[in-house]
Image (tube, rainbow, N blue to C red):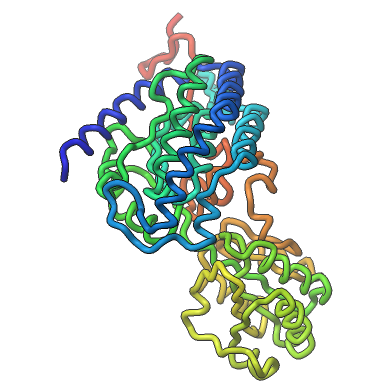
Length: 436
């Protein structure tokens, strides 16, 4: 391992820790002013950002992943689109930063407070986590999203983006830091690792002396790598294997609408539907109706034996299909005997992300909501609503399939910890307990 990589990243860690202590002292008003300055700086730097992105686009189109990384196949059209910046997308980044400035600051919020019989006054207060590492792939807008959400909550950030977006990421991070500095942003509050080598991921993940939390955003391979290496807590988002169960008491029209929306409104995202479960009592009538609507949208269907008996031209599903996040216009369908069978299937094959039931029976819905072990459980709602902005958070850093410390869409609150502040009048643990 080259000594320059660990030396540089550990220096960034020390600098981030120093910045974090300063960030924790900033008022909400100061943070919001800094955010507005960042947004203005992004707009002003649009020509430079487009020029940097053009370098990434050219390299990605030719299969050159970036400095220090072996050449590979050119990126697909979909991946190139994720990588591309234009004036509209830069404006969207700037507008997003201004939106974050309008959100309520959770830092300093009193979560709870109480008085003890001995006179101690105790408060539980939201505080920044401290220093957060973000490892992500492809989309350069994540550089801005992650940095400003962490900053709003008083956290210093070390970013490690994908090699295919290195020029864009460097440019965005530099503009955010410089633009914010003019309004009072502490030095090194936002840092981007300049290396694209894979060893930089290992160094960052093992830097527990300086890093309080690491958040990987990307494919399953990246997340598993970070989890295997990390010496600090990891908030992760594994597969989005989302289910929708159509109960025997479901309104058929609603069930078709929710199925089609969950699967096709945007199929390449983590909250898109991957498996449809249908109650056996309505399978004969419902499956042809929903299949026609899905096929009209170009969806490939794969079904269990009972599904294939009704829809004779459907591809037979394998056991792997129940465990697959397609991120494509492909849907697996299974007929189940009851809500209990649907719940059992979801808890065995799901990824604990988002699962929904369609039913008019409130008791059945409550049973589903209570017993499905997922971050988001819905009743008569498209799975596509598992999103921080749809929850009213304004913005999100990602969707966690963990149970600690955050679960589901992660907004600003999930980027904070808490501390106890105890005030007294000289209380001691000795005899008497109170002085004076």
